[in-house]
Length: 286
Image 1 (cartoon, rainbow, N blue to C red):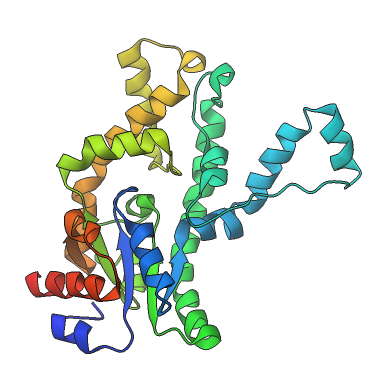
Image 2: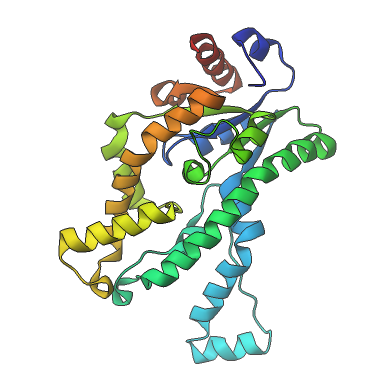
């Protein structure tokens, strides 16, 4: 770790962290607090995925829908209108919409094979966006003179690294430059996270083997054909399965490369000093 002790952290003039954990536990909220106070550069992995690596796919999906409307189709063909995603750090809906939900197309779903194809695109994009963290650390310093840096990861970072491999190429690279911090909500946050997800779905990525098992088990459990699956029901069902599956792997990442902080402590962070104190305590506890 780049900070072995609480004293290392407290004395450092360049604080660089990577926040990871399930969506809805405060990664982006904390990142915004740090950024808004003017002394931290906020790098959003999801934003990078949606703009640099998936932006063209997202825009093409919008255009495909627009081409079904004769009026818009003619304007698109003549380059009279321009269609693009308005991606924001706090609103990842263009990316979520593109990744979609498998199931009945009449209910807003997409064919499972197409869903799987988009998942594969997202995997490659997430790995690249995670590695880009190093580039943005240097960019933040050289262009904007930011010493402090926060990498706001996707909830699915745990799906694109091997938590049990201490030589994992992505985590080995990142841990040389940032302190990985797991925001642990514990099993008690499950119902709250599911409720939040239902109201505002985030981009969802599954390891392919796990996704195939989920899909097979869902079809069997619900006694439903693939084309008749309620996409909203499956995506919530799958999210709950992911919550259960990811917790021990998040813990392993923290054990091998970083620290763990409690989501309740993060909820009480209101400024940079609060955040620094939480990290210091986590390093002391480790």
